[in-house]
Length: 292
Image: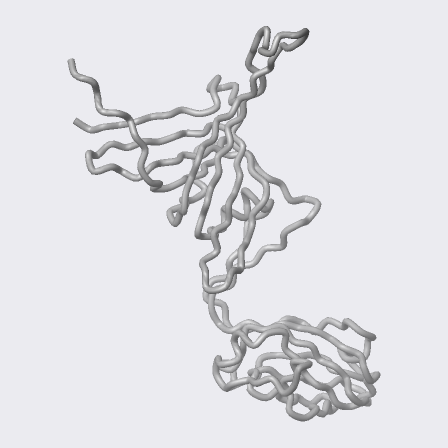
């Protein structure tokens, strides 16, 4: 009988994390730059005296680490490696958050400042994805600033007026119970019910969203958890139809890099530890299949 063909692994096809409790898949990672399972063990050496070599060697701790280079950010990646799953609001209409006072208390005020803000009727197409600051420049007028110009060309164009990131060419006058437009933003500010008397220098912030899908998550709460999971790793199917998989029974990970590089796709490298599953009496299973 001649020697058999060598068993080889080529490329990467997918990684599928799954629930250890129900067996249900969390999702599938398909846009991958690589997936490496590193099995490492330490050797404990007995040395002493004048001998230049160990007297004895025994095995110490072994580890199995899965290194993932991914090129996508599905929701379950945040759940497993950042501690919380995002929520998605599909096909949402244009929206604006409530005003929040930052400096002082007079810009957002039901009586002496701005009582509310909202999307201006008929100008919905002008609503941008942005964060704004409203600053009192006199007792009755405000300037508006925007943190980023990434969405300024949606609808009617917005432009910066100066290096302070101001978007209003002249101050907006706040009038009692009257709405005033923030030009080209699709938004309007409505004055309070009393005599407008803001303190110069006071500020308030808000953000706006155009129509469309929104996914968001708050990371870093004391209640966030990093669940254990299983994972199935598959190499690319070879030309001879051979398939190679690794099934990791019990995994845990923590940490999710999010790269912002010049003219490059983000490629976070994630480290996952695989460890002993008592029910399986194993850490992982390797399986190769070559259909006849």
